[in-house]
Amino acid sequence: PSPSSVDHQPRHGHTPRGRPRYAAMDPMSIPGAFANPGGGGQQGVFGFDAPPADPAARPTRPALAPAAPAVLDRIKAWARAALPEALVLSEGGPKLELYVRQMACRKPDCVPLETLIILLGDGWHESAEVLAAAKEVTEEQATAAGETLWQSALARAAAATAAAGGDGGEAAAVAPDTADVPVPDADGAGPAPPLPPGTAPPGTIVTTYNTTRVAVDPRTMPMPGADPLTDQSQPGDELKIVLPRDIEDMEEGAEDVYVVGTNGRKVTVIAGLDLAAATLEEVVLRSHLITRMDGLTSLTKLTKLELYDNQIEMLEGLECLPLLTVLDISYNLIRSMAPVAHCPLLEELYLAQNKLSLIEGLDGGAAAAASAAAADADAAAVDADTADAAAPAGGTAADGATSGAGVGSGVGAGVALTKLRKIDLGGNRIRTLAGVGACVGLQELWLGKNKITNMDENLEGLTNLVRLDIQCNRITEITHLETLTNLEELYLSRNGIAKAGGLGMLASLNTVDLSNNRLTSTEGLEVAPALEEVWLSANQIPTFEAVGTLEALPAVSCVYLEHNPVASEVDYRERLKTMLPTLTQIDAIALPRR
Image 1 (cartoon, rainbow, N blue to C red):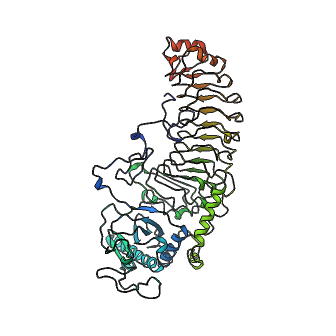
Image 2: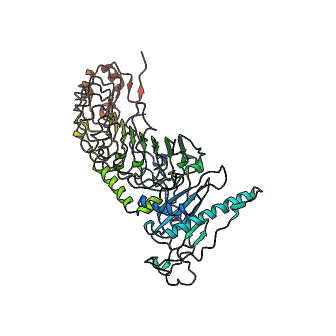
Image 3: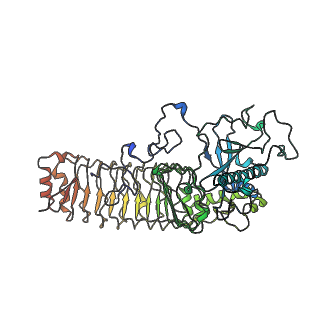
């Protein structure tokens, strides 16, 4: 195909030489562009969903909201303390895990933020909602939730045993009556005054739509008179929990997890991977509905993480993954890449089609230090005894919470990512090359479809660069390439370049793409004697005289001049072949061999 008709599919839609495609394409052909059209799904490249037939039918699925990791660990430790020492329902059965997240509640009777506590089983889960922000959850509420989650798990196991014709034994236990749970007042000094009739005290556990809920005092809710136990939810309002292990079997000791969501089943939460934390090296969760990078902090041996085509808005937990060499978060909603500074061993970084406006973190500078300081500050906010409780005996990640204290300190801060060999930041909102100059080992830099206006001095230190792509930007002049003596491929299509200059020192350059620019001649290309492929489609080159400088290229084998005035000349191909006898291809047509 013509190199001027390109689209962007990083690493998976390349031309034969490995060049990613960036230009406009049919949005229906983009994976995930219209996934989950009800409104909660992937927004794809163009940032819109297919509207539902009835706008009133759009579901109100709650969204995960940020909360300090140390606060979530504190709640997890409290809930874990209410569970048996060995989190298994039967001998040889899978180990259960706790998952805690803060959500933005969109139900009409709900507080702005609620905390979700989930007991994760093998293909099932039991959920408890505390109708309060994570930092306001009390130990009594978390403990009550943990107790009821365990009883629900036992009841589930008993039902399964009974269905199989066995004896439920201990698993036949039922949830205790929790109506008499004491209710502390605001100061914690004693019981609170009586609640309005028909309401339950804080800490009471109820079940609605298979979701256990922990009521809070309705007097603290933003909507006066609302009943915290009145179920006004509809099917689809609950946060659907689908884990990687719910789709693909995972064994203890596994070295990789590879789950692609194109078969209809979508992972929504990253959890349940602690079983293989000691051995897991690669995690690939492509084309799912994941919104948060949680559940990864225990995977300290991870070297490859691919979360391509999800709904992730923030890079999180990278300070716990110092061994990463490949990171792919393309086709998400990331606005800052600064946390990559915590991964000094990175060799390949893919953040194409996000919402980045700056190139950050590659120099391991202040951004990493600030991120580490913030993580330590969050951990310091937790009481010392709570932090101790967050790490259960034995210290295994599967058995309890991992304290966030000190996680970010000293990891990556101040260390430039000099091992990086390939960066793909195409399809973002980047306006300047500032921040890329520290990656002195870089061999491939892909920055197509951004808003870059100048090729500046940040390129000069990239002396190992082999491929440079800055197509679909706002560049008007080719500059600062003199030191890139190893450069072999240069892609600058769809800019505003009027003259092909600045190539004099590029002795290794064999491919140049200047399609869709403002060139009126090929002057400036003759100084690159190694050129084999010259792509000049859709410029303003008028005559054969204007391409005469190409005769100075001894090895030129492919030339694109379609959509130029010269391409409408009589006997265009025959004359061009006579002028350049080394040609084997003109435009998209291979020439017959003599």
